[in-house]
Length: 202
Image 1 (tube, rainbow, N blue to C red):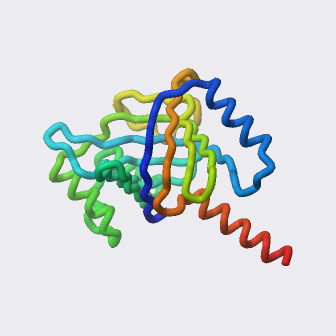
Image 2: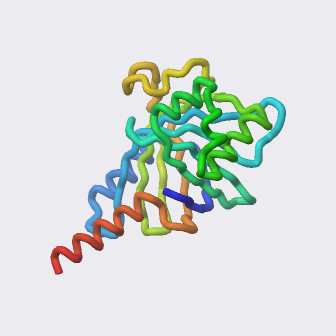
Image 3: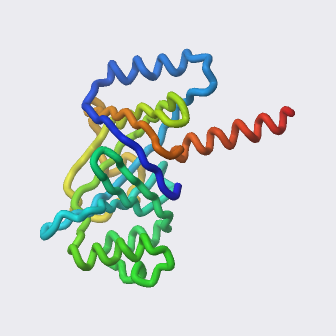
C-alpha cells in the first residue's frame, strides 16, 4: 500500500454486535462484499517534548509483513501510508539503531529519522489485535478491532511467537466506519482477483 485516505467514525462496541455483523456477511449472496481478517501488532512512537504532526508506528500484519506506518489527520480526513521494511530493520529501529533511515532513498523513511532525532520520538506503547474488515463496497469499510491489548512499551519482544507475550481481552472491541477516499489495499487485491477470474473464464 502506498497511500490511503479516509474519514472515520470510531466507537467502542461488543462481541454481540460484531457476531451479528459477521453472520450478515457469511449469509450474504452479494459477491461484491467481502470480509477479511488480519492479525496486527503495532508499536507506536511518541515524544515527551512536542506533539508531532505525523504519527509513526512499526506495524506487522499476520506475523509476516512489516511496515513503518505514517499517519496524519487533517480535520476529519486520515491519510495513512505503509512503507515496507524488513524484520531486521524493524528490530534495529526498536533497539534504537535507526541511523540507516538517514540514508534511505525513500523520503518518508528519512522523515521518520528526522522526527526521531528532532522530536525525540521513542517507542511509547504497543498494541495487538485482530482486525476484521467488512467491505461494504470499494469505498466503505466497517472495521472491528477484536481482542485489543494495549500496554506501555518496555522491551522489544515484537517478534515473539504469536500468543507468547501478548494477552488479549475479547471483551475489548472497537468499531470504525471508514469512508475511503482512495481504494484500500484489501479491496484493491479483491478487485484484481475478480478481474483475473473474469479474464480466465472469458
